[in-house]
Length: 383
Image (cartoon, rainbow, N blue to C red):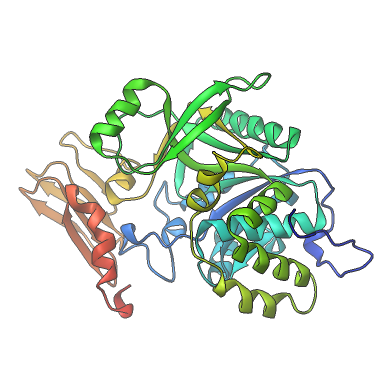
Protein backbone atom coordinates (compact mmCIF):
# COMPACT_ATOMS: atom_id res chain seq x y z
CA UNK A 1 0.00 0.00 0.00
CA UNK A 2 1.09 3.57 -0.61
CA UNK A 3 1.87 5.89 2.30
CA UNK A 4 -1.19 7.66 3.70
CA UNK A 5 -0.96 10.97 1.86
CA UNK A 6 -4.32 12.20 3.15
CA UNK A 7 -4.21 14.70 5.96
CA UNK A 8 -7.43 15.82 7.60
CA UNK A 9 -8.01 19.57 7.47
CA UNK A 10 -8.71 19.45 11.20
CA UNK A 11 -5.16 18.28 11.89
CA UNK A 12 -2.98 20.18 9.45
CA UNK A 13 -2.77 23.56 7.83
CA UNK A 14 -3.70 23.57 4.13
CA UNK A 15 -2.98 26.68 2.07
CA UNK A 16 -5.68 28.64 0.31
CA UNK A 17 -5.42 26.71 -2.96
CA UNK A 18 -7.41 23.90 -1.30
CA UNK A 19 -10.41 26.08 -0.58
CA UNK A 20 -13.33 25.25 -2.82
CA UNK A 21 -11.97 21.89 -4.04
CA UNK A 22 -14.54 19.20 -3.35
CA UNK A 23 -13.61 15.57 -2.86
CA UNK A 24 -13.90 12.98 -5.60
CA UNK A 25 -13.59 15.53 -8.36
CA UNK A 26 -11.92 15.56 -11.75
CA UNK A 27 -8.85 17.73 -12.23
CA UNK A 28 -6.50 18.52 -15.11
CA UNK A 29 -2.80 19.34 -14.95
CA UNK A 30 -0.65 20.71 -17.77
CA UNK A 31 2.99 19.61 -17.65
CA UNK A 32 4.98 22.67 -18.64
CA UNK A 33 8.46 21.94 -17.36
CA UNK A 34 10.31 21.04 -20.56
CA UNK A 35 13.30 22.98 -21.83
CA UNK A 36 12.62 22.62 -25.57
CA UNK A 37 16.27 22.70 -26.63
CA UNK A 38 15.35 21.63 -30.19
CA UNK A 39 13.68 25.01 -30.64
CA UNK A 40 16.80 26.99 -29.75
CA UNK A 41 17.54 29.89 -30.12
CA UNK A 42 13.98 31.13 -29.48
CA UNK A 43 13.59 28.58 -26.70
CA UNK A 44 16.13 29.45 -24.03
CA UNK A 45 16.71 28.79 -20.35
CA UNK A 46 14.82 31.91 -19.31
CA UNK A 47 11.97 31.32 -21.76
CA UNK A 48 11.47 27.65 -22.68
CA UNK A 49 9.62 26.35 -25.73
CA UNK A 50 6.16 26.29 -24.19
CA UNK A 51 6.42 29.99 -23.38
CA UNK A 52 7.54 31.15 -26.83
CA UNK A 53 4.76 32.87 -28.86
CA UNK A 54 5.09 30.48 -31.80
CA UNK A 55 1.47 30.01 -32.87
CA UNK A 56 -0.72 32.92 -33.92
CA UNK A 57 1.31 35.15 -31.63
CA UNK A 58 0.50 33.06 -28.54
CA UNK A 59 2.48 30.47 -26.65
CA UNK A 60 1.96 26.73 -26.80
CA UNK A 61 1.07 26.83 -23.09
CA UNK A 62 -1.63 29.42 -23.78
CA UNK A 63 -3.17 27.14 -26.41
CA UNK A 64 -2.96 24.17 -24.02
CA UNK A 65 -4.74 26.15 -21.31
CA UNK A 66 -7.54 27.06 -23.73
CA UNK A 67 -8.19 23.35 -24.28
CA UNK A 68 -9.17 23.02 -20.61
CA UNK A 69 -12.14 25.37 -20.96
CA UNK A 70 -15.30 23.35 -20.49
CA UNK A 71 -13.33 20.25 -19.51
CA UNK A 72 -12.89 20.93 -15.79
CA UNK A 73 -13.74 24.08 -13.79
CA UNK A 74 -11.05 26.74 -13.39
CA UNK A 75 -10.50 25.92 -9.72
CA UNK A 76 -9.47 22.38 -10.71
CA UNK A 77 -7.03 23.36 -13.47
CA UNK A 78 -3.34 23.05 -12.56
CA UNK A 79 0.04 23.71 -14.14
CA UNK A 80 3.27 22.01 -13.09
CA UNK A 81 6.29 23.98 -14.24
CA UNK A 82 9.66 25.19 -13.04
CA UNK A 83 9.36 27.54 -10.10
CA UNK A 84 11.72 29.90 -11.92
CA UNK A 85 9.11 30.25 -14.67
CA UNK A 86 6.21 31.11 -12.34
CA UNK A 87 6.08 34.80 -13.25
CA UNK A 88 6.31 34.04 -16.99
CA UNK A 89 3.40 31.58 -16.78
CA UNK A 90 1.21 33.94 -14.78
CA UNK A 91 1.98 36.77 -17.19
CA UNK A 92 1.14 34.59 -20.19
CA UNK A 93 -2.06 33.17 -18.68
CA UNK A 94 -3.75 36.31 -17.42
CA UNK A 95 -6.07 35.47 -14.54
CA UNK A 96 -4.63 32.05 -13.72
CA UNK A 97 -4.52 31.54 -9.94
CA UNK A 98 -0.93 31.31 -8.71
CA UNK A 99 -2.04 28.86 -6.00
CA UNK A 100 -2.81 26.31 -8.72
CA UNK A 101 0.67 26.56 -10.18
CA UNK A 102 2.86 23.77 -8.77
CA UNK A 103 6.46 24.92 -9.01
CA UNK A 104 9.30 22.42 -9.34
CA UNK A 105 12.54 23.69 -7.76
CA UNK A 106 14.47 21.89 -10.53
CA UNK A 107 13.66 19.54 -13.43
CA UNK A 108 13.35 15.85 -12.40
CA UNK A 109 11.56 14.54 -15.50
CA UNK A 110 7.91 13.69 -15.92
CA UNK A 111 7.42 10.93 -13.34
CA UNK A 112 8.15 13.39 -10.54
CA UNK A 113 6.05 16.18 -12.05
CA UNK A 114 3.09 13.80 -12.14
CA UNK A 115 3.87 12.40 -8.70
CA UNK A 116 4.11 15.88 -7.16
CA UNK A 117 0.72 16.76 -8.60
CA UNK A 118 -0.76 13.48 -7.39
CA UNK A 119 0.60 14.07 -3.88
CA UNK A 120 -0.74 17.63 -3.75
CA UNK A 121 -4.19 16.63 -4.99
CA UNK A 122 -4.40 13.53 -2.81
CA UNK A 123 -3.72 15.56 0.32
CA UNK A 124 -7.00 17.47 0.00
CA UNK A 125 -8.95 15.01 -2.12
CA UNK A 126 -8.11 11.33 -1.59
CA UNK A 127 -10.47 10.38 -4.43
CA UNK A 128 -9.02 12.84 -6.95
CA UNK A 129 -8.78 11.75 -10.59
CA UNK A 130 -6.67 13.94 -12.84
CA UNK A 131 -5.72 14.28 -16.48
CA UNK A 132 -2.06 14.90 -17.31
CA UNK A 133 -1.84 17.05 -20.43
CA UNK A 134 1.01 18.43 -22.50
CA UNK A 135 2.10 22.01 -23.13
CA UNK A 136 3.84 21.48 -26.47
CA UNK A 137 1.15 19.96 -28.71
CA UNK A 138 -1.48 21.49 -30.95
CA UNK A 139 -4.69 19.47 -30.99
CA UNK A 140 -7.92 19.95 -32.95
CA UNK A 141 -10.86 19.66 -32.97
CA UNK A 142 -11.47 20.69 -29.38
CA UNK A 143 -14.73 18.75 -29.06
CA UNK A 144 -13.08 15.43 -29.94
CA UNK A 145 -10.17 16.10 -27.60
CA UNK A 146 -12.54 16.94 -24.73
CA UNK A 147 -14.68 13.85 -25.34
CA UNK A 148 -11.61 11.59 -25.22
CA UNK A 149 -10.31 13.15 -21.98
CA UNK A 150 -13.76 12.80 -20.42
CA UNK A 151 -13.77 9.13 -21.43
CA UNK A 152 -10.41 8.68 -19.72
CA UNK A 153 -11.62 10.43 -16.57
CA UNK A 154 -14.66 8.12 -16.48
CA UNK A 155 -12.46 5.03 -16.79
CA UNK A 156 -10.18 6.07 -13.93
CA UNK A 157 -13.10 7.19 -11.76
CA UNK A 158 -14.62 3.72 -12.08
CA UNK A 159 -11.44 2.03 -10.82
CA UNK A 160 -8.38 3.65 -9.17
CA UNK A 161 -6.27 0.75 -10.49
CA UNK A 162 -6.72 1.94 -14.06
CA UNK A 163 -4.15 4.08 -15.85
CA UNK A 164 -5.25 5.67 -19.09
CA UNK A 165 -3.19 6.85 -22.02
CA UNK A 166 -4.37 8.34 -25.31
CA UNK A 167 -3.36 6.95 -28.68
CA UNK A 168 -3.07 9.15 -31.77
CA UNK A 169 -3.89 7.59 -35.13
CA UNK A 170 -0.51 7.41 -36.94
CA UNK A 171 -0.39 9.15 -40.31
CA UNK A 172 3.06 7.85 -41.26
CA UNK A 173 5.68 5.46 -39.80
CA UNK A 174 7.28 7.99 -37.45
CA UNK A 175 10.52 6.94 -35.77
CA UNK A 176 10.58 9.88 -33.36
CA UNK A 177 7.42 8.94 -31.45
CA UNK A 178 6.59 6.15 -29.04
CA UNK A 179 3.81 3.65 -29.86
CA UNK A 180 1.16 1.80 -27.86
CA UNK A 181 -0.25 -1.56 -28.93
CA UNK A 182 -3.99 -1.98 -28.42
CA UNK A 183 -5.64 -5.13 -27.15
CA UNK A 184 -9.29 -6.01 -26.60
CA UNK A 185 -11.97 -3.32 -26.17
CA UNK A 186 -13.02 -2.52 -22.61
CA UNK A 187 -16.65 -3.50 -22.19
CA UNK A 188 -18.88 -0.52 -21.61
CA UNK A 189 -16.12 1.92 -22.56
CA UNK A 190 -15.61 1.27 -26.27
CA UNK A 191 -13.57 2.32 -28.21
CA UNK A 192 -11.16 2.30 -25.24
CA UNK A 193 -8.95 -0.80 -25.29
CA UNK A 194 -6.61 -2.65 -23.01
CA UNK A 195 -2.98 -1.69 -23.61
CA UNK A 196 -0.67 -4.56 -24.48
CA UNK A 197 2.65 -2.72 -24.47
CA UNK A 198 4.56 0.49 -25.05
CA UNK A 199 7.34 0.72 -27.65
CA UNK A 200 9.73 3.65 -27.63
CA UNK A 201 10.84 5.13 -30.99
CA UNK A 202 11.14 2.07 -33.27
CA UNK A 203 13.22 1.96 -36.45
CA UNK A 204 11.53 2.75 -39.76
CA UNK A 205 10.85 -0.86 -40.78
CA UNK A 206 9.30 -1.65 -37.40
CA UNK A 207 7.27 1.56 -37.42
CA UNK A 208 5.98 0.71 -40.90
CA UNK A 209 4.83 -2.72 -39.71
CA UNK A 210 3.08 -1.10 -36.75
CA UNK A 211 1.17 1.35 -38.93
CA UNK A 212 0.19 -1.37 -41.41
CA UNK A 213 -1.06 -3.67 -38.63
CA UNK A 214 -3.67 -1.18 -37.43
CA UNK A 215 -3.05 -2.28 -33.82
CA UNK A 216 -0.69 0.53 -32.87
CA UNK A 217 -1.20 4.21 -32.08
CA UNK A 218 1.26 6.98 -31.39
CA UNK A 219 1.77 7.55 -27.67
CA UNK A 220 0.41 11.06 -27.09
CA UNK A 221 2.16 11.64 -23.75
CA UNK A 222 -1.20 12.43 -22.14
CA UNK A 223 -2.67 10.36 -19.32
CA UNK A 224 -5.39 10.06 -16.70
CA UNK A 225 -4.68 8.72 -13.22
CA UNK A 226 -6.34 8.31 -9.88
CA UNK A 227 -4.09 10.22 -7.47
CA UNK A 228 -4.21 7.34 -4.99
CA UNK A 229 -3.62 4.72 -7.69
CA UNK A 230 -0.66 6.60 -9.12
CA UNK A 231 0.98 6.98 -5.71
CA UNK A 232 0.56 3.27 -5.02
CA UNK A 233 2.18 2.43 -8.36
CA UNK A 234 4.97 4.91 -7.62
CA UNK A 235 5.75 3.09 -4.37
CA UNK A 236 5.91 -0.21 -6.27
CA UNK A 237 7.98 0.93 -9.24
CA UNK A 238 9.94 4.00 -8.03
CA UNK A 239 10.17 3.69 -4.24
CA UNK A 240 12.76 6.47 -3.95
CA UNK A 241 10.33 8.97 -5.48
CA UNK A 242 7.46 7.60 -3.39
CA UNK A 243 9.38 8.17 -0.16
CA UNK A 244 10.31 11.69 -1.23
CA UNK A 245 6.74 12.53 -2.20
CA UNK A 246 5.44 11.29 1.15
CA UNK A 247 7.81 13.70 2.90
CA UNK A 248 6.84 16.57 0.60
CA UNK A 249 3.13 15.86 1.04
CA UNK A 250 3.44 15.82 4.82
CA UNK A 251 4.93 19.33 4.72
CA UNK A 252 2.59 20.70 2.04
CA UNK A 253 0.42 23.53 3.32
CA UNK A 254 2.65 24.07 6.36
CA UNK A 255 5.44 26.59 6.99
CA UNK A 256 7.91 23.81 6.05
CA UNK A 257 6.47 23.36 2.54
CA UNK A 258 9.02 25.42 0.61
CA UNK A 259 12.12 24.18 2.45
CA UNK A 260 11.04 20.54 2.27
CA UNK A 261 10.32 20.73 -1.46
CA UNK A 262 13.64 22.47 -2.14
CA UNK A 263 15.56 19.88 -0.11
CA UNK A 264 13.86 16.67 -1.23
CA UNK A 265 12.86 17.23 -4.85
CA UNK A 266 16.39 17.54 -6.33
CA UNK A 267 17.30 14.14 -4.84
CA UNK A 268 14.57 12.21 -6.69
CA UNK A 269 15.54 9.86 -9.55
CA UNK A 270 15.22 11.56 -12.92
CA UNK A 271 13.09 9.36 -15.21
CA UNK A 272 10.07 9.69 -17.49
CA UNK A 273 6.59 8.57 -16.48
CA UNK A 274 6.50 6.28 -19.55
CA UNK A 275 9.60 4.32 -18.49
CA UNK A 276 9.03 4.45 -14.75
CA UNK A 277 5.28 3.78 -14.52
CA UNK A 278 3.43 3.05 -17.77
CA UNK A 279 5.75 0.36 -19.17
CA UNK A 280 5.92 -1.78 -16.00
CA UNK A 281 2.24 -1.11 -15.24
CA UNK A 282 1.21 -2.58 -18.60
CA UNK A 283 2.42 -6.00 -17.43
CA UNK A 284 1.35 -5.70 -13.78
CA UNK A 285 -1.70 -7.87 -12.91
CA UNK A 286 -2.87 -5.34 -10.30
CA UNK A 287 -3.12 -2.47 -12.80
CA UNK A 288 -5.24 -2.13 -15.92
CA UNK A 289 -3.60 0.15 -18.47
CA UNK A 290 -6.10 1.43 -21.03
CA UNK A 291 -5.74 3.36 -24.26
CA UNK A 292 -8.40 5.74 -25.51
CA UNK A 293 -7.97 6.29 -29.27
CA UNK A 294 -7.91 10.02 -30.02
CA UNK A 295 -8.83 10.74 -33.63
CA UNK A 296 -7.59 14.32 -33.82
CA UNK A 297 -5.21 16.54 -35.73
CA UNK A 298 -2.15 16.33 -33.46
CA UNK A 299 1.09 18.22 -33.94
CA UNK A 300 4.01 17.64 -31.61
CA UNK A 301 5.88 20.94 -31.86
CA UNK A 302 9.22 19.37 -31.07
CA UNK A 303 11.42 20.74 -33.85
CA UNK A 304 11.65 23.70 -36.19
CA UNK A 305 10.16 21.74 -39.08
CA UNK A 306 7.16 20.85 -36.89
CA UNK A 307 6.86 24.45 -35.73
CA UNK A 308 6.98 25.51 -39.38
CA UNK A 309 3.75 23.59 -40.00
CA UNK A 310 1.92 26.21 -37.93
CA UNK A 311 3.03 28.97 -40.35
CA UNK A 312 1.26 29.75 -43.63
CA UNK A 313 3.06 28.42 -46.70
CA UNK A 314 3.72 30.26 -49.98
CA UNK A 315 3.70 28.86 -53.52
CA UNK A 316 7.31 27.66 -53.23
CA UNK A 317 6.84 25.94 -49.89
CA UNK A 318 8.41 28.69 -47.80
CA UNK A 319 7.02 29.31 -44.32
CA UNK A 320 8.01 32.67 -42.84
CA UNK A 321 7.15 34.23 -39.50
CA UNK A 322 8.34 37.80 -39.19
CA UNK A 323 9.96 39.94 -41.92
CA UNK A 324 11.25 37.84 -44.84
CA UNK A 325 11.92 38.15 -48.55
CA UNK A 326 12.91 35.21 -50.77
CA UNK A 327 14.17 35.13 -54.36
CA UNK A 328 14.18 31.72 -56.08
CA UNK A 329 14.20 30.01 -52.69
CA UNK A 330 11.98 27.09 -51.73
CA UNK A 331 11.12 24.89 -48.77
CA UNK A 332 12.42 27.34 -46.17
CA UNK A 333 11.32 27.86 -42.58
CA UNK A 334 12.34 31.35 -41.45
CA UNK A 335 11.52 33.08 -38.19
CA UNK A 336 12.63 36.57 -37.22
CA UNK A 337 11.89 37.53 -33.63
CA UNK A 338 12.75 41.15 -34.42
CA UNK A 339 10.19 43.02 -36.53
CA UNK A 340 13.01 45.36 -37.61
CA UNK A 341 15.23 42.52 -38.86
CA UNK A 342 14.56 41.12 -42.35
CA UNK A 343 15.60 37.60 -43.34
CA UNK A 344 16.43 37.69 -47.07
CA UNK A 345 17.47 34.69 -49.16
CA UNK A 346 18.49 33.97 -52.76
CA UNK A 347 18.44 30.51 -54.27
CA UNK A 348 18.23 28.63 -50.97
CA UNK A 349 16.47 25.29 -50.52
CA UNK A 350 15.18 23.36 -47.52
CA UNK A 351 16.81 25.45 -44.81
CA UNK A 352 15.73 26.55 -41.35
CA UNK A 353 16.77 30.12 -40.48
CA UNK A 354 15.88 31.43 -37.02
CA UNK A 355 16.95 34.93 -35.95
CA UNK A 356 16.77 36.29 -32.41
CA UNK A 357 18.51 39.30 -30.86
CA UNK A 358 21.07 37.01 -29.22
CA UNK A 359 21.65 34.21 -31.74
CA UNK A 360 20.91 33.09 -35.30
CA UNK A 361 20.45 29.47 -36.37
CA UNK A 362 20.92 28.21 -39.93
CA UNK A 363 20.64 24.50 -40.70
CA UNK A 364 19.26 22.06 -43.29
CA UNK A 365 15.70 20.95 -42.57
CA UNK A 366 16.74 17.30 -42.48
CA UNK A 367 19.14 18.00 -39.59
CA UNK A 368 16.86 19.96 -37.25
CA UNK A 369 16.95 17.16 -34.65
CA UNK A 370 20.65 17.96 -34.18
CA UNK A 371 19.81 21.39 -32.75
CA UNK A 372 19.64 19.69 -29.34
CA UNK A 373 23.22 18.44 -29.81
CA UNK A 374 24.38 21.90 -30.88
CA UNK A 375 22.67 23.42 -27.86
CA UNK A 376 24.52 21.00 -25.58
CA UNK A 377 27.94 22.20 -26.75
CA UNK A 378 27.15 25.90 -26.26
CA UNK A 379 28.27 27.84 -23.24
CA UNK A 380 25.64 28.94 -20.72
CA UNK A 381 25.72 32.52 -22.00
CA UNK A 382 24.32 31.34 -25.35
CA UNK A 383 21.83 28.79 -24.03
